[in-house]
Image 1 (tube, rainbow, N blue to C red):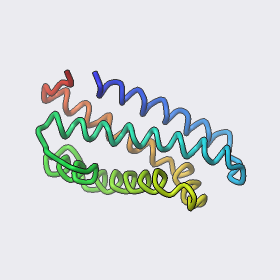
Image 2: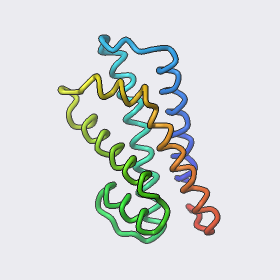
Image 3: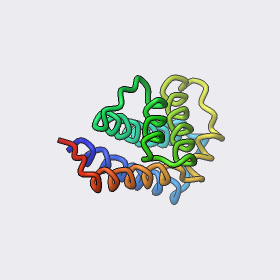
Length: 139
């Protein structure tokens, strides 16, 4: 149940971020910047929560999201490029969460324009299918 809910949250925030990219963002407007940051943060946190729950279901005892990515890669659920992308996503989220006063607007702009958040959603969806194929269900 939790994994399905997290997938919904991820998908909803992909739509929000796509809409922001379509409309265009006034990067000089603090409210607009914070709206994008919040959507990115919620999206990223849902991805992290999905990964951590998956590690738990697989019996991987990990202390951090980065360790979880490594565990999933070792178990064959993530390829090298996917793991690298998720590590960047986790690090970006840590910066957003802990350094609001020093946000690099150009970096946020590149994230939105590059639409890497869509790649993360695709990876999570693929993991979900792999879990289903292995008969691993979230109670």
